[in-house]
Image (tube, rainbow, N blue to C red; front, side):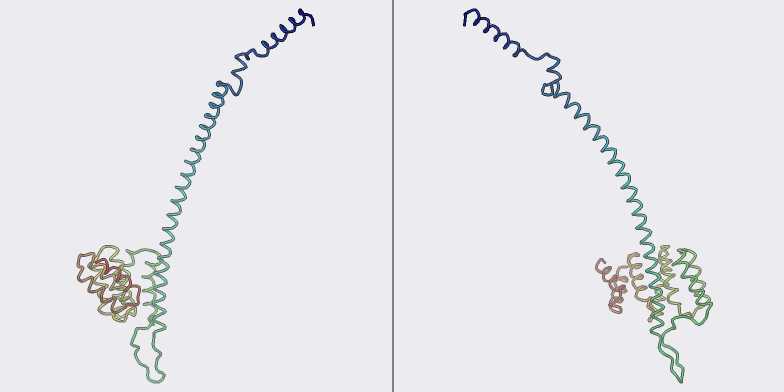
Amino acid sequence: MKPKYVLAAILLVSGSAQVWAAPAPVSEAASSPNSIEGRLSTLEKLMQSRNIMQADMQQQLEVLQDEVSQIRGVTEETSYKLEKVLQRQRELYQEIENRVARVTNQPEPQAVVPTIAAEAPAMSANLSENEAYDRAVALIMKDKRYEAAIPEFEAFLKNFPNSVYESNAHYWLGQLLSIKNDDVNAINHFNIVVENHQDSNKRPDAMLKLGALYEKQGKKDVAKQILNKLVQQYPSTTAAKLATERLSKL
């Protein structure tokens, strides 16, 4: 090859290398995803997206918290109402059990010579007496008119002084008066049950109530005496178990 052709070839190759090695324009570098500007732009977009998502999540969280609070309020109210219903049912069932117990424990009459039963019959033969007692109990169990039940039971005791429901009426009056914080009169009625109705199935509960009321008045010695007597005389009853728990705290 002639020298002038060799020289031309070298110059051509050298010029091509310079063209290939030339840097990219500034506008192209800025638009490249690997450039600093491109990376910053991508980060800014990611930050904006994240902020938007956080704001949406925060809003959703607040809505959920409000809904949970509302549900909790409804649940608590429902639980309270349910507990009241269950309490009323327990009281009613207890009253029914008391009546059934009197029926089952009533002694059979003699075939030839009638004898007077040692215990009071389950229900009075006087229809008006039964109606008066049931009406007074309904004011408590059904209508929840506790204030109105007090004069109703007082009238019952006045009109039927020898009723088979006398101990129950005194017990209910003790309960109602203790709710009103009329502790003195409540104690009087519970004492009548304890002292004058030894065979009443209300007697253990009346003793428990007496112990609680005397403790409330600060007469702990009297309360202990009554509660200990309750545990001794009625050891297998629920009232005795509650009395034992109360004694442990006195």
